[in-house]
Image 1 (cartoon, rainbow, N blue to C red):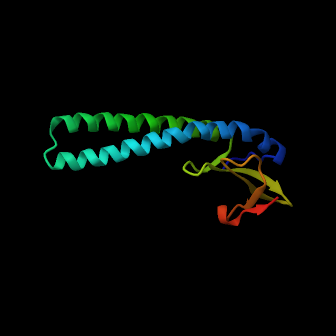
Image 2: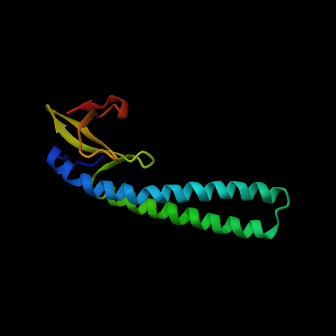
Image 3: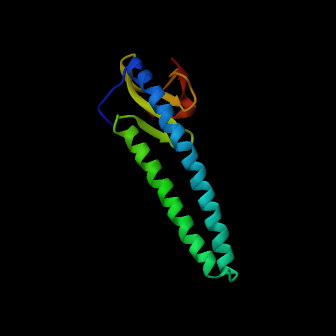
Length: 132
């Protein structure tokens, strides 16, 4: 964990940027899932004598997966560089370390939420979210 603590205002300022990041990740997740599904189908076809064409398609599918994974990784890294904790790329769930009522907590944001309205203790996760 970082030593940086966010005020609610500082975290809230980053929400529009975060939403753009997760909006960019969303189609990449779909591309990745599609490439993974295709790869599974191709492996099955190759096992039943699918031939060299299936092997070439599998190579392309693997390249597509790597491109999507690399770009998602780059986008997540931009979030980490701002000392924001990414809890779930799939859900678009992030935490901002913050100080509340004399202790360090997380301000919690989920992609699609217009603003930060929830927080949770350091040792609880999403299920422990409470209204601000």
